[in-house]
Image (cartoon, rainbow, N blue to C red; front, side, top):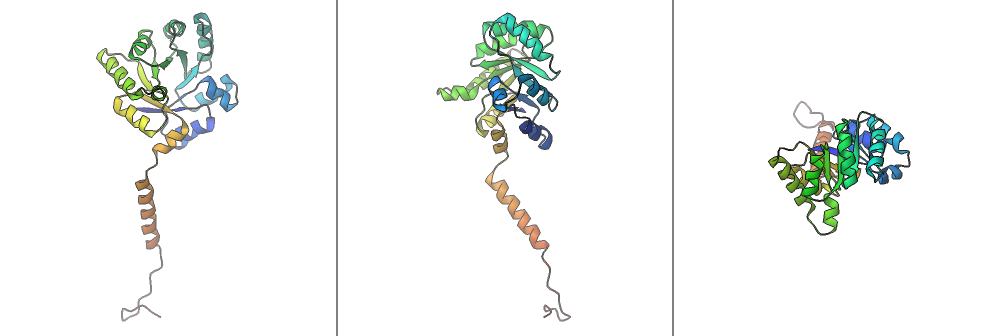
Length: 227
């Protein structure tokens, strides 16, 4: 499963992609862009210069407007994936854009039927949101399992991106469910690296190493330490 960051923070992207080498894509949305305090186009271009898969979301709601906006966003950089909503207008616009060679991410998916509709328009990615289902007492990971099963049964190539990952267990369960991609906030990516036994083991190794660097007592000819 590929690991994406759900962020618009360039430094977080650079850390995950360049410093740690574990991130292969980024998902953004208007909320994240606003939080970064930057112009949408400027920020997306900065992120595209770092990583090869960057979802940038439209804010239009009508089909013709989504098409126009989607074309404009796609022109920003070859690494852009245009994110459209799971609505009739979003699907209709996504179909046109996909037909023009634009990679499409259909977002806000909450059912297998919606995922099938995303595949039908030729979407590159569909994004089921598991955290938001958990919020309303529905098991979000079951949606990932079901979408993956349906896609495999039908030999559908659209990638399943497990979205709204709130903790490391969401990431683990998404991988076990067969998701192609998991996208998460930076803090969740950080927490994936942590385990108390890792910390304890590292400290033990370092302590043992430090002991080997301590000066050894000088031995006398009789074998007793010199005084």
